[in-house]
Length: 290
Length: 168
Ligand SMILES: Cc1cc2nc3c(=O)[nH]c(=O)nc-3n(C[C@H](O)[C@H](O)[C@H](O)COP(=O)(O)OP(=O)(O)OC[C@H]3O[C@@H](n4cnc5c(N)ncnc54)[C@H](O)[C@@H]3O)c2cc1C
Ligand code: FES
Ligand code: FES
Image (cartoon, rainbow over all chains, first blue to last red):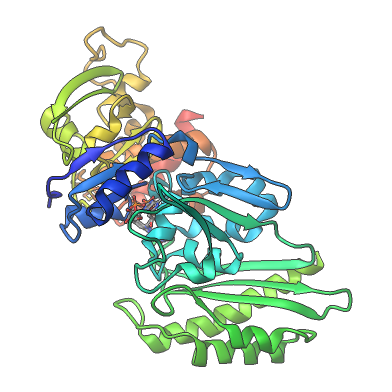
C-alpha cells in the first residue's frame, strides 16, 4: 500500500525543527531513519498530516566523548554506533548488541533516537538505555530537560516526551572499571526481532563481591523490563552457579511478563529468559576478571 | 509538489514529486528503472534495496523527496560500475557487459525467477567492498536481510563466494 498524503518539511537546524513541532504538535511526526515510521505509513496504520524530516539536521548526528560520558546525537545511525571506536571502548555492551538490530540495510538508515522514541518492547536500544543508565535530553521550543531512561519508557510504543518535544541527545556514562557485560538474544534469524533477549552487567569489588548487577529484558513486557529483585539477589554476594541460577529463575518466573507470539509461546520465552540470564551473567563475570 | 534533483546511476534527474511518493516508485514509475523490485513495502523482503550515497538501503522506506541532492545506485547502474566503456548517454558499450557479481550469479545459478536478485546484488556490493574475503558464515549473515522464495539460498551463497573471488 501507499502512504496517505502529508505536508513535508525538511528543516536544517534544531531551532527550525522545534518551531515546527510547537506549531503542529501531535499532528506532526518526526521522520528519522523511517525504518519503523514508513512501514506504518505504507500500511496506513499511522497517517500523520505533517512530517518533519530530521535527516538534514547535521547538528543532530554525532558521537562524542566527554570526560566521563558518551554523547550521542539523536540522528546517529545504528550503523555508526556499530563501528564507533568510542562506543567500543566506553560502552562495550552497546557495541556488542547493535549488530543484533535488524539488517545492515536497515541499520544504515535507522537511528538511535528513532528506535528509542519508537519504544518497541522487542527493540534492543531501549533495553540498552535502561541497562546503561542513559539519560535522554528532550528539547522543545521553550524548554529543555533530561529524562532518566528509567522514567522515559511509559508502555508499549509510548514515552515521556510531550507533543512539542524532540529527543536530541543521549548521554551514556562510561563503563566502570571491574564491570563485565554481556548481551544475548534468540531470534528466528539474525536481524529478526528476537523472541527473548537479555542485557547483563556485573560490577565486582576487590574481593570479587558483586557491588552492582543489571538485568534488562526485551520482549518481556510492555517496554524494556528490568529484573530489580533478581539483581538484588546478586548484589553483595560472591557469585557462583547456584546464585546465578536462582536469580535467573526469579527473573524469568516472577519479574518478566512475556506475551507470547507467533514464534514463541510465553512459556518458551520464560525458558529462554532463564537460560540467557545464566549465560549472560557467566559471560559478564568472565569479562570482569580479564 | 516538490522539485527534486536526484543523481541515479551517475545521471541527474529533476522532477516534481508528491512528498508521499516512495523512492522505489520514483525509480520505477518516474524514471522507468524497473530493475528495483517491490515485494513487501515494509522493509522485510529486501527486493527494493538500492545504494543511497553508496550504502545499501530500502527504497520502499525512503521518500523520493529525501533523496533530493543525493546519489542513488540501482541494479541498472551495476553494468556501468564495471565498465570502462561508459557512453555519454549513460549506457554501456557492448550488450553483455555484466558486473562480476552479476556474472557470478549467472555462473553459479544464484537465481531462479530473479525477483529477489536486484536487491541481493545491491546488498552484496557494499558487503564485498567491506569484506573482500568473507567466510560462508559472514555471507549468510549479510544475506539475512533479503528473502528468496525460489533458490533455498545455497546457490546464492555459492554465487557470492564466486563473486568475491572474481572481484579480489
Ligand atoms: C525489516 C526490519 C527489521 C527490524 N528489526 C529490528 C530489530 O531486530 N530490532 C530493533 O530494535 N529494531 C528493528 N527494526 C527497527 C529499526 O531499528 C528502526 O530503525 C528503529 O526502530 C526506528 O528508528 P528510525 O530512525 O528508523 O525511526 P523512524 O521510523 O523514523 O521513527 C520512529 C518513531 O520515532 C519518532 N522519532 C524519531 N526520531 C525522533 C526524535 N529525535 N525525537 C522525537 N521523536 C522521534 C518518529 O516520529 C516515529 O514515531 C527493524 C526494522 C525493519 C524495517
Ligand atoms: S519492498 Fe522494500 S523491503 Fe520489501
Ligand atoms: S530467485 Fe525467485 S525469489 Fe529469489
